[in-house]
Length: 135
Image (cartoon, rainbow, N blue to C red; front, top):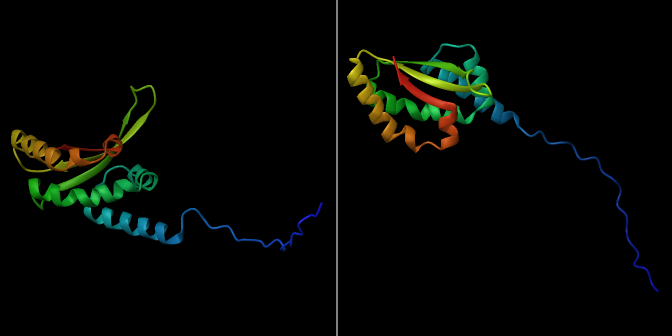
């Protein structure tokens, strides 16, 4: 019986590639800075929440034109974390609270229109993490 002769190659150390590259971190950092200029961060934990859920940063950037459409460019949007402590597990959700000068009935109508035009088009997993309200 003849054996096939194998050629062995020396072992080469391959450097580990990080799972998150530096560009992604810089992009997230730049996006977070941009969001801080567009929104009011009510809770210091908002930044950490956004770092943990970077897709929500894109959602916030998408939301602004719709919020402006229904509430005007003078409305202030305040971001805060809501924690549902009555649930069996503590659930955190980011709320974009739209501060405006409209009468409450009109503001709720505008929120309903915004919800139907844009918010409900978001994936269900995103809506579990992000919500809108009026002040």
